[in-house]
Length: 111
Image (tube, rainbow, N blue to C red; front, top):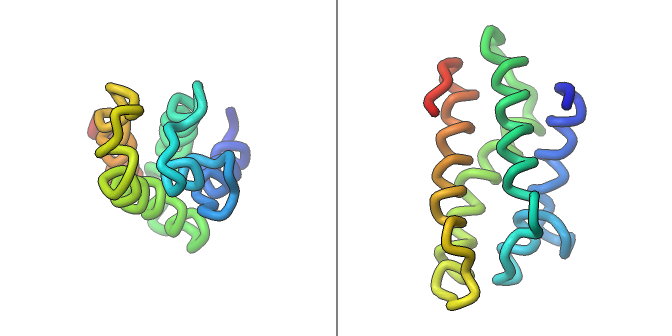
């Protein structure tokens, strides 16, 4: 995966109004589709590698990074996290996403 593909994937997955995106599914109280979290984590690692020496991040990407870590956790806690249908590792996956986002902002890989 290259930088542009990773950037686009991450931005696309934060669309709350689409029914098949990561945040869209969490907003509906549904778990992510298989492979969705893995793709997000891979995209975050690619973004980290590309941005670790940069001093700025574009606004659309920064907004997506914020949403994929903070908004995802809020949606999870408000719905799917309370459900019996919740995948057992999703909470931990959200933690890994948040650590990867923190790594991108700090310039030092945390995980």
